[in-house]
Length: 201
Ligand SMILES: *[C@@H]1O[C@H](CO)[C@@H](O)[C@H](O)[C@H]1NC(C)=O
Image 1: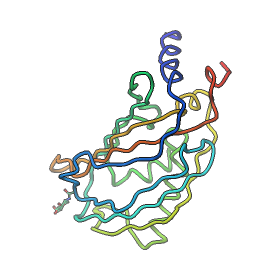
Image 2 (image 1 turned 180 degrees about the vertical axis):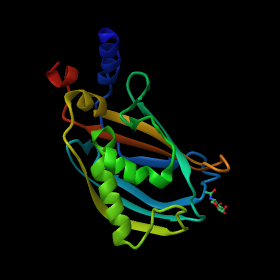
Image 3 (image 1 turned 60 degrees about the vertical axis):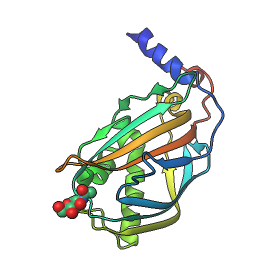
C-alpha cells in the first residue's frame, strides 16, 4: 500500500516544471451558460504557495442561481495527464450545494487551503453589496486585483500542488439537474518543491 502511494506521488512529481500563464475558456463557447465572464485574470503565474495571488474578474449572471451542485475535475500535467483525486475536499471534488458551500469551505478549511480564500470571498461580496445567499439574484460582479493568500502546507501537499493543472468546473441545478455553467481553467502552482517529497520523507 505504501509503495502504491509513493508510486502515485512519483507520477505527480514527474511533471514538467515550466509554469504557463493562467487561462480560462467556456467548455462550450457556443453555449456559455448564464454566467457571462467579461474578464478573468489570475496572477502571478505560477501561483506561489505559500504566498499571495491576485484575481481580477468581471462577470454577470443572467438568471437566479438556485441550490446547485459543483463538480470539479482536475488533471495535473505530467508525462501523461494525471487525474487529481479529491483530498480533504480539495481537488477533483463534487460539492453538493452552492447555497452552503462558502460557509462550509470557511468552517472546514477545505484542503487546509480554502478556508481563508472563502473568508476573503465573503468579505468581497459584503463590501460590494452583493449576495451569495440562495437563490442568488442576477447580479454583476467586478473585482480588481482582489488579494488572496495561499498558506504554507505539508510536504506531501507541496509535492501535490507543484505543477501545471487543468480543471473543469461544472454547475448543475439541483432541482432540474441541468448544467447551467461550465468553465475550463488552467494554472500553474509553485511550492518551491523540486525534489522527491521536497527532499523529505
Ligand atoms: C432558478 O429558479 C428560477 C425559478 O424557478 C428559474 O427561473 C431559474 O432559471 C433557475 N436558475 C437556474 C440556473 O436554473
